[in-house]
Length: 564
DNA sequence: GAGTTTGAAACT
DNA sequence: CAGTTTCAAACTC
Image 1: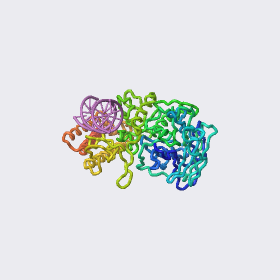
Image 2: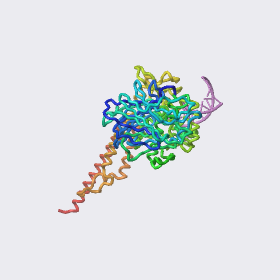
Image 3: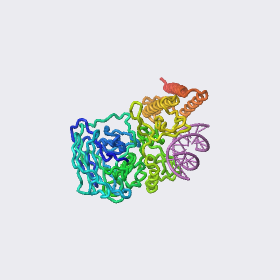
Image 4: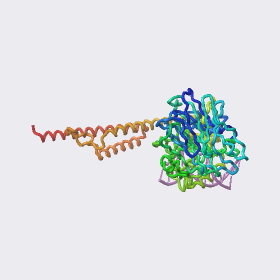
């Protein structure tokens, strides 16, 4: 971390403020309700905001009252329609209205020796050129005298379109920050979600662990009237439990005012959030140090190449995997056998996630192995302080646009950078001058690359078509009675009663035979498909014909039995 | 599914 | 920093 104004919480001003909304961001034991609100947005910084704030990105929290879920996303100054799932690099976070995220600070705080514990206790808004900032300030009373004093505290700051109000709780350990924001009306004005991307691993700024305090911190993100239910995240949040990718802003790395904060991968918060939602009884506000139940973790992953740079660069799923009910794509399970999932070989570990439903052996990437995991994270960071930083960053494009590019570059020698072994190719980006690859074919004008891209596009189209056809067929099948009556109301036997198991098996055999035949004569896949489908059509005709003939026989036999 | 290839990560 | 080894994913058969 460099000495930049990272201790700022940028707030994106609303376009036409018509109504004031208050969002409590509470650090304390009990979240305080704030005035009724309809819409608001709060940006909390995490990583890489801008050139002037290069290592932190603002987290935009869009909240709203009502019953629909509210989104928290990680994109600078962007607000999205509530209830929309926005995929992030490692997943998505969806915050329900009135939901509270609580962080158990008692175990969260574990500062490196010599560093002061940090308590968020004030808010300071600063007017920037592009953003308006709310600065979280360590009160001077809590600052270790040996450490440089934090910036001056400001209680209430009014900006052009923003009112930031700060309050400090009567409990010194439970300071509160309220941010009052203008709103644009009853409906949040969303930015288009299409192809919404971010370029770096999104992280959430959390108070960093300390070994000196036992107080509990609660971050409340809510803009609605007093909630009927509160969901809180209170993980057993120790330094050694912070996920890989967490950066504690402290020491020389961090500007003085943000020491004691941790940049936590969004996926980690999402995991915890989902965990608590699954088992809310372990996360009641009355529970001072609730435990985290490992198996409650639900992995969150995204397959958007823009969303998880590390994931993309390391092979986290990009293929069409099924989508979980949460809207997130399931993370690809790892298969580590020797690394205990505590080295960067492990995708889960590298992405700051716990292993869940993986096929790994001797896995220590879980809460049962906190200490080991902590050591491993430290070890990785010792070797490479950027170990958990995104591999895909931004470079300058031809027309000045910022393209995605591999920060470190690849070193491929034999794959021509046209296989998924290559991190650039896997991330669907072209190799750059940073790469040290040999025989690279992963560049703009490369004919090999173009051919591959065309093939990939064609394959994708086919998959989409097949998926659409399957869903259409299944919806049609679902409309057919599973156990059709043998005869209709008039007593007439219905044709589909002739589709017995034997008939179905025979049909399948015909189709398989046709497929083999088509394959044997080396027909193109499209032709093979057509041949099989045509065979299926012939089978259907035979079945229908057979049914009609049998029906005719039956009706004749019936009329024979009934003399005039 | 087993075996091979590959390149990043880890190690020396 | 360079060379080597280890590792897990990608790939092939």
